[in-house]
Amino acid sequence: MSPGLLLSVVLGYFALLLAVAWRTSRGASSADFFIGSRRSHWGLVAFGMVGTSLSGVTFVSVPGFVGANGYTYLQIVLGHVLGYLVVAFVLLPLYYRTQVTSIYGFLAERLGSSSHRTGAGFFILSRTLGATARLYLVVRILQDLILESFGVPFWLTAAVLVLMIVLYTLEGGVKTIVWTDTLQTACMVGGLLVCTGMLLGRLDLSVPQGLTRIGEAGLSTVFGTDPMSRTFWLKQIVAGAFITIAMTGLDQEMMQKSISVRTQRDSQKNVLVLSVVLFSVVALFLYLGGLLHLLAQQVGMPERGDRLFPAVVMQQLPAWVQLVFIVALISALFPSADGALTALTSSTCIDLLRMDARQDWDEAKKRRIRQRVHLAFAALFLALVLGFRAVDDPSMIGLILKIAGYTYGPLLGLYAFGLFTRRSVRDRLVPAVALAAPLLCAVVDTNQRAWFGGYEIGLELLVLNGALTFAGLWLVSRPAASPGERAASGA
Image (tube, one colour):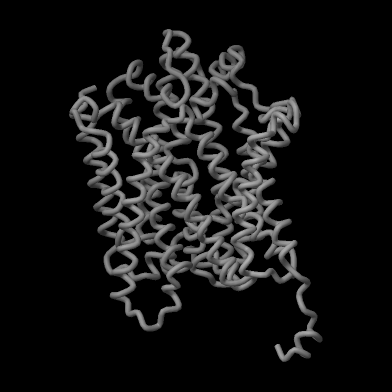
């Protein structure tokens, strides 16, 4: 496949995205940018959120994950389904009842202003690192497959991709990405189906025969049975549930799309449909991963991990499938990057700059400040993508989940404390507690082999982090005043 033709397809796809953005962003206000003025259709949001939840990392890393770990990732996805039930029936009613624009407004109302800024700060940190790690992976693949042959440096590839994301999110925000994410999810899922079908044809297998061959190759193990291992089924399912609660239910990027739906009931339908579709798509990714490893073994390809899927497509499948793969890969990239950029802008403007409370700022001033924040995060994205170039982890999905364990844990603890206790915290001490918990987790993680013998802490690090945050908040809190005590104090 000619790199020039691939590049032309990529540019044509960008042009389509810009056309959709232009159509949907005309006359967009701040309310449209932040939460789509609560007029988004739940079906569009549900389908588009599949792409946001999966990203380019899932597209490349999950199939590559099968070679070393079989289908054990499905345990985490089973946990995700449980987590989505909590999001739908615990967190969404809270957000609709309080009518928040940023979900971290709950922390201000329940715990105080320092808690509010702390929650927003941890979201900004986590989403910035996670989104740029996902973005890096796809930039690297596009660089290797297309732009290296033109002599284009990596930094320029990264800069152009970030610029494209800025161009179609700068004005419309959520109002735009609800539509662009739907388009991109359709392209991603279509590419997944095409590649799976072509691999079955290349291996001369039916779908059931493919499952049988994958099992015979020892690649279809779903449940880990060793309680000491990181892949033990109970640990993975529990961790998967808490990952969804934290990375979806407590994440402004994911929730700003859900609360852009007009009614709570429709928003709950969005989340429940998302859980079913997501489970099905990830299962198909794992099946694809088994087929990729079968073909790699058959033809003697050495590539493994994140590099396997691109290598098989570009070396073993027809040219038109290569085009489909590139479009699907880009489609997997953008829903996570564009949503992250918009959500980071929203959280900074609302939670840190308190734009919604600024009565002295007119719409023009709010728009200027919002755009400056948006561009600042775009510049930070570019800098971090270039930084990840130096790390180049062989499996980015493991790195992203590790980052989430450290950065979403304090959010999990803050919300659990706010929802399930009535105690009052010493608000000024909350940032110290939220910083201490992940630091303690790092100490435990570093010394786990010496302290716990053969037991391995995996993704449950997120739960430990949340529990430590909750315990710390309890220590710096006091019982809520009774009605009689509040009346006596004149409150």
